[in-house]
View 1 (cartoon, each protein chain N blue to C red):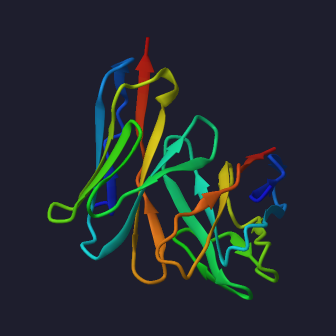
View 2 (view 1 turned 45 degrees about the horizontal axis):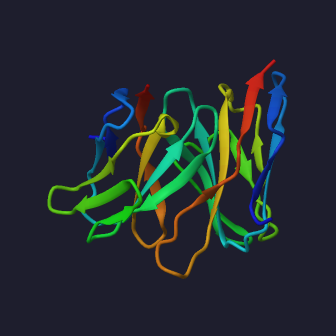
Length: 114
Length: 110
């Protein structure tokens, strides 16, 4: 089955700790995205990557880092510098090169502070 | 002014009703438009793309009005299972950076 897999589904972070959220896709999509969603709010873009070994900051990149060493994988690290990390994190991917294709989402990771 | 605006609702309608949502966008150079559905505590799922000439998928009709800079979603014969939040997504520029609206909540009751 093709799709986007995010893990873990739930994650707890202790103060001062970095945590990494996994996002893997087997859709052969070039572009991948990370969003944060707070209760009752829209999605806000953290980072995105259009191609392997390249990524760009979104609107709220402070306190987060990413890497794109493989096409299939786009992990997000929530660092200790992110003081309010509790949120629903969504990873998305998109096929490029064929007009404006829509994004497809993983089922998300819920991060909470211990 | 926010780039993409939606009425948060909730829109509370009986089964069988017809309901319509609008979404306004501020960037006149916007190129692509989509409607997503998001259930409570779940990921957004693509409902439909919005084409310039308007398009229909079963009970759902999407339209684009470039002159007034809004897109709309019409749901006919509402079902209980249509209860969800509907997100409007607009993209601009060649780098395809989408902007999401905050969503409109729909509650369909018996």
